[in-house]
Image (cartoon, rainbow over the protein chains, first blue to last red):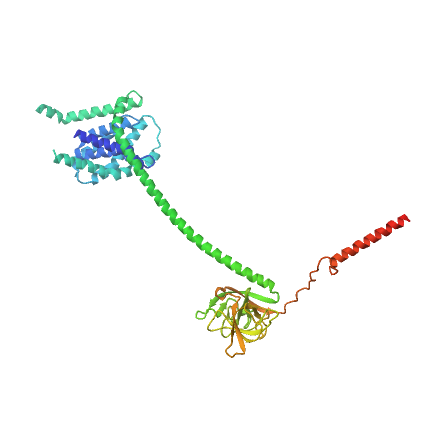
Length: 162
Length: 326
């Protein structure tokens, strides 16, 4: 189980950082780690959501992160919140990840902005909203259902086969 | 075992663990930002695990980009091809127009040259705007009428020779009966000075493109390739306009006369621009030129004058020298 999740995480992260950079918009492309965290949290609950947030954030911070811990913290928060909603939703309804993906990216965006601000950096919020957040929301909406489908099908597969 | 399970699922412990993790992560952010926390080994290990997959995906991505670029290039080439096709069509149309203008220019230049040469005629240039569909080679319509000074029975020519005469002058257009028409008859004469045989050129129903010169006495001096010009008899056609040349000579059925098949000088199938003779007068006589003299003979006036002057100069100088001696 752990190995399967590790393979999924590594493949999605490798795709995010190498494959989908070819279809970026002004340097912005899809954040599959965030989508994976939200999807796992919605399917499996907050505990696994936080765990997934920790792992995906750790990978991101170790490889690409400029500020170590920011992505971990942000993804864990998002995994926790999304996981708390898990018992209240129908998991086979794909509208929830579609709604959750843009909300999660907005939360992640403002957490990161908050950290950057508290660490003493000057930011142009309006520019960041236009240049980063809007294209990111678009990409997240496009990839939300495919990532959720991977997580959902994998969960059904593991339930069926023990 | 039961205690362990209870401990593992204890929500209070989970919450405490979560809070601890959050606090640790939160603190690590500020520590890491000040450079007090580094994970070099973990960084390298993660990169080592991820790099083969990233390389693989990067290779796939580059191929996809190559494919995308190729598709875009094909699309661009397609658009470029369409634009070039349109351009070629436009240029072909322009080329056609230019060729048309060039041809018209050539014809009009020839006609203008004829007009300048034919000082005895006042000409009005006209374009052929229509032909009678059934008998297209016999009656044509030109774009000049009475407002241009055209009247019935005026002669129509090109720089090559006789075309016909105005059958009916309208206001803006006129009908021209070609000399090929069977109803047309033109008084003609053989141009060769030794011959000067007169005859009538009339259209032939059976051979519309080659009229016949009839009423030629059997013993008249008419030969193949003789040039036929208008004689001025009859009052319609002025004298001296080229009609064509004798292509063939046949004996008439009656036995006393013969007729010649005339090859017209004008190509009636390519008739586009013509000129109408609105007034004609006798051609002014050519200025007389002295005949060429054989150099050194008595008739070479110029040389004689020079020679006389030289002799007078020599005589004067010898006389002047003799006076001094005395």
